[in-house]
Length: 411
Image (cartoon, rainbow, N blue to C red; front, side, top):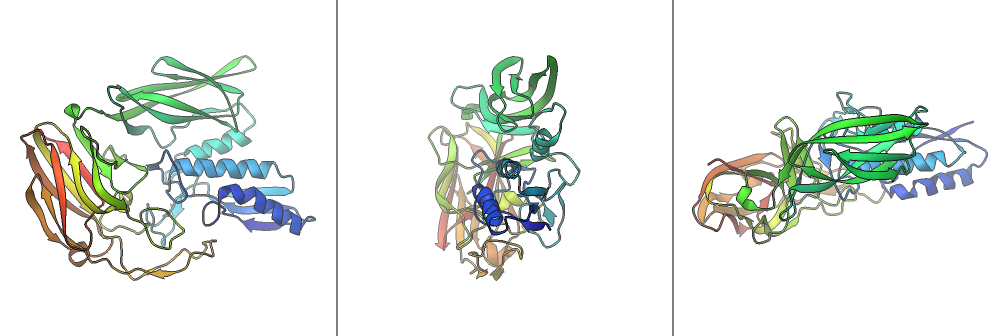
């Protein structure tokens, strides 16, 4: 007789580190019965990446951490007779909202059957022949912020392999050799602006195996004198990639002189929610780029970009995230501590000034546009002094919000 369990510690409830402990508890209760892990998985929206991944951020990086733990804990326990990852590929799920509405993103591959890094992790663990893959799966177009006076931005890149060691090359320069630990090597790669040539090399029994990749990198320079364009997410800790428009959306930062960032404000959080620590998973209507609108800063005072003189296009993105009555949980959520709660719509009316000019007067997002609808306000701005772009928020009622911001130099 076999006993099967759907286990989602670290996703619908608990911590992924508790998965192995829970397996042991089940075995202690039924020591004479082999166990099947009949479902396990974590959402990975192929457009979302995070360098400090957390549960429910939908990043590929969190999914990699999750599956590493599950694979390791399953393999080290002989009483686990088998396991089924949920799922091979992303699939349609009509009732879902989240970052990609109507799609379940737990697949090891995308809807188009394009492998994610999690797919390669399983190949490295269960394929018998030598395997080596640069973990660029769904991230061949990426971007980052350069440090002061630096021509590059350093970011994590994973190489997935079942060999003993890997040497990594970036733009013709060796970054050294590393031992493979739990099928992974982690590299801090200095990416330059534009095309980056990456090569990974291993030797197995004297035979060389390698993988190569070209990663297109959008480097945001530290010096605002070289400013061209930027897309910014408010209240977010993750990057969002719009491959169709070739746009990279960066998390906002607190303002520092000579740079850009927000003044005041706090990240939007759903009260009494165990699902995510920031933002919402509502379906945002009027866009396919839901993550642009699913986070926001609440109560911010202003936004500053110390750009040079010139003509700019400034686009403000809004969506009201509170309201729509009942905020329910998925029926298969395993966290019993999460209760269904009623959302109370926020009352907020505010003005927006762009370089001292009133551009948005007494906006009431919920009353004018409804709940969870994407709203864009686009303006031209001419900077004629050394003060850059200044966006000021003045409240008439409640607290002002901003979900995202785009600034592009047009002259």
